[in-house]
Length: 351
Image 1 (cartoon, rainbow, N blue to C red):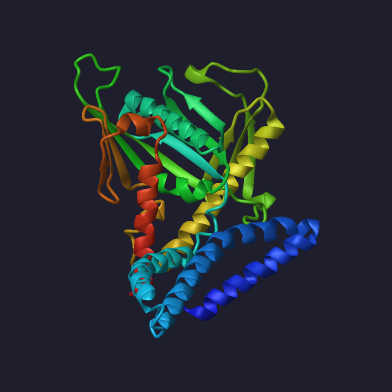
Image 2 (image 1 turned 135 degrees about the vertical axis):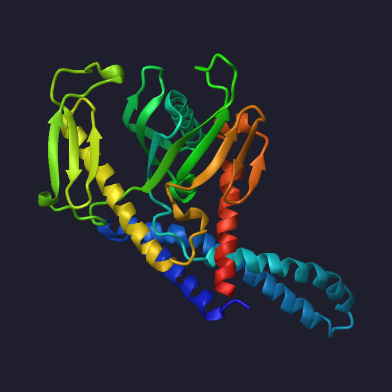
């Protein structure tokens, strides 16, 4: 049985926010009120659907005592009773605690792991996969920093993704992605295994992370392209070192001012992610199996090209649609990961 008081509190809060929006809140309140309203709307819709079903059941049960209506009620009740468990589960899922970062934009960092040139080429394939996925969902993906190898692979890339519910879906991509295929650089036709690491960080705002000027060292240097050639002759590239943590961030766009802004945004996202990781570790020291933990060292997925399959090891899901996945068709994988995460949270709450 779901707590009626809590459902009423949520509905009343939603109605209050709706009234505030209709009355025209102060400019500095609009964003916060709109965000909370948007977060509560799907929950309130599920509450309304659940209560409608409850009301229909009560009315049908009351009609059992009416000789003229009893037969109709007896026909209707099995359908309503059958629908109730699904409505309860949908509402329970809607009421699950939300990750406060879910609605935020995200930074994606991709780096080659073991496998040399082939790993760098695979890192490039992953970037294109995320570019296509972002496009399919109507998101915007901008490259913040990119270093290429001479073969056209990626040494490192950082991308900024904006849109609706970006981090909520992309956070499941953090970890080690493994590829099994015959590399284009291999003449003997042998299958190689290589890997790339993906880190997805929620974008942080200045209010989230305060970085005192004394905690960072900013160096300027010449920006260089693939193979070490200088892409311009001015000292426009910026490297920021966060002294307490040792995190180093670089940006090498043409504008030094823009590079400082980009590098600070990336640094803020990494420090915010560290804070989130510490909080998650403290809350879940005994729950290391959680799907969305973002453990960068965990091998999460294997892309096997000879067999055309992709396997997500966290939920033991194998799909024989590798071509579509590499073209950005990730929803089936991500939806399954979200469902597994929700099932785990429901089990913990019930336990």
